[in-house]
Length: 312
Image 1 (cartoon, rainbow, N blue to C red):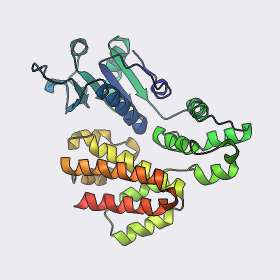
Image 2: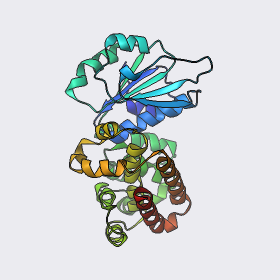
Image 3: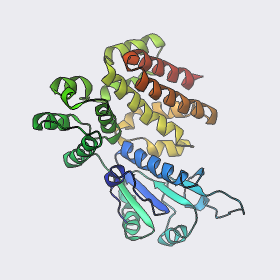
């Protein structure tokens, strides 16, 4: 069964009633969002153990009498057949296949789309129509009304990658109707998130160079938020992948030139450091919400703390 990822996002009470979800596409941030929502939903329903396996051949249906329900993440579809899907759909576990789109999986996706026990979630860059749908949802959620001119200006500024668009929408929650004007959009809504993203690729420089790059590119709360959410995307890749192969397959295609650098960062992290990284993300996100007037300092402290943790 095909499932629209935007329908999931815009429905807080969406019912996840399958035990097999196949997340694919080329928009990494939306794929991560889908995976996070599915994991959270089933953890809230007593699937407390998260497990990752390379492919279906590593799956073992070996429930002990008091074993917990599992959520199993699989990043390779090479060994799976239609019979395997039928077997998995009868199990207690929840299976999440997380695979970047390619011609090799086209046939499998067709099978999954027709299977009532499976959910196929294709994630691609957001079209103008989908951005409009998401914008309308958040305006209603925050009880905001915009003039036609401001509406279209805001829509044209929104990123087509979900995590960055979501970040911009969260900014609206702190505003009133009469505060959303051309000036707000110019100052608060990003034109290009890649500008701050590049700081991630300077982490192994000395602190003086990092501070210089930060001061050159980060000027206000909007820039700090963009920086944080771009770093968060990379941090999720580190946290949610257990092996170098899994991590390599999860790197977005547009970063193919940076694969060597990213693998070098990933290989510096073990379980203990991943746990510390999660705490750093939570601490920073809380600080950005509560200490927005100190955002420049919070952002720089986050970057330097991430570097310190990485190289430790």
